[in-house]
Amino acid sequence: MALQEKYAELIQSATTMGVANLAVAEQDGVLHVSGTAKSTADYDALWALYNKIDPSMASGDLMMNIDIKADAGAQLKVTTDSTNLNIRSTPTTEGAIVGKAAHEEIVTLVEKTDDSWWKIKTANGEEGYAYAQYLSPL
Amino acid sequence: MKLTKLLMAIAIITTVSFVSCKPKDADIKAAVEAKLNAMPDMIKGATVDVTDGVATLSGECKDDMCKAECEKAAKEVKGVKSVVANFTLPAPPPPAVAPPASLTTTMDAAAQQKVKDGLKDIKGVTVTFEGDKAVLTGDVSKADRMKIMQMLAAAKVKSDVSKLGDKK
Image 1 (cartoon, rainbow over the protein chains, first blue to last red):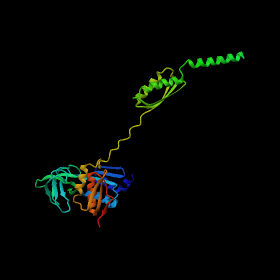
Image 2: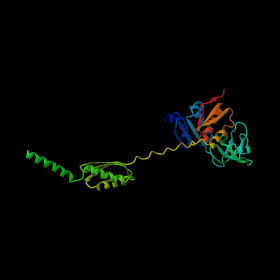
Image 3: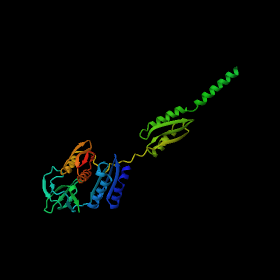
Image 4: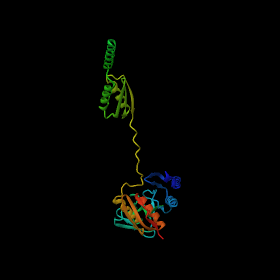
């Protein structure tokens, strides 16, 4: 319960934002929060709150598995620091590079393969798997 | 003297005949126990106490039907005048605690690969896998730290970031 109190503001915000399927559970000293945020802005706000409540996120007592609502066909922006995003044949960095998406290019979501890898399609028709961390639903 | 002996004899005979005219409580107890123990799928830890033909039964019955059956079985034993049934029902099973959806159960090769993939573009961080945890070491910027935490959450792995320092 103590962790739910520590992160009460975050849980409250997630509720107010209307995070879908919001689930909060404490297990083995780690608070698990999962759900689907409506937008990238909501997602960023929740992570900023996490950083505020637990400076530097060093405690390792929160596992915030929030993804962003994006259905097949949704537009995604490539949010790498500056480089191109590799598009691969399989959902792992072992997969051969079949294409590249430029920094800030808009691509289309084909499917959310899992929470780490998404299948995307570029405007040029290149299709494959890219690391979801660098894709932000618009 | 004679009278005393006679009275004593009468007393002994009376006692013996009084006891022998009905089953002893201990025998009833044994008989009821044998009957209940013959139904192991119905009742667990059956205990029986018999006092003056009144059988008090206890133990853990699996359901209400079982209670009635056990009571009936005990009543059928010769010498049982009445039955007091103090059965208990099994405690309801504890609710299953599902692991949080945000956690994979094992740190398998696929999970490890996801972590490595996510760290690929983040400089100065090394990861080792100890037990079911990804242990991260190195100094990172604040922005990278958030990326790492987001990546770990997405990969649904347990982690230890206590050795992750701030880049000067």
